[in-house]
Length: 81
Picture 1 (cartoon, helix red, strand yellow):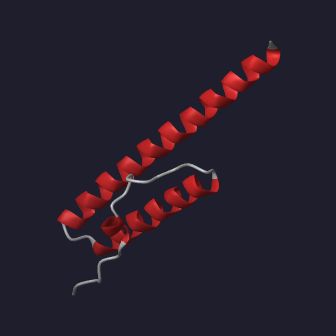
Picture 2: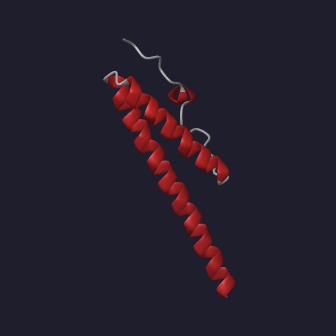
């Protein structure tokens, strides 16, 4: 019986991890879109880097992120003077 409880607790932990990770990805996407709208190139690059870090974290933990992020969001925009 204890093994069943442990397995359930682990499943909840994985589910929580994915939920928090997905929430953070959405928050960074929102911040990225806002930075791009006002032309803050450096800030946009920071958000792109953070998105890549979160997706890398997901990959290292075998989380399928298909459809989470538009590949165009992961491209850096050249700085404009």
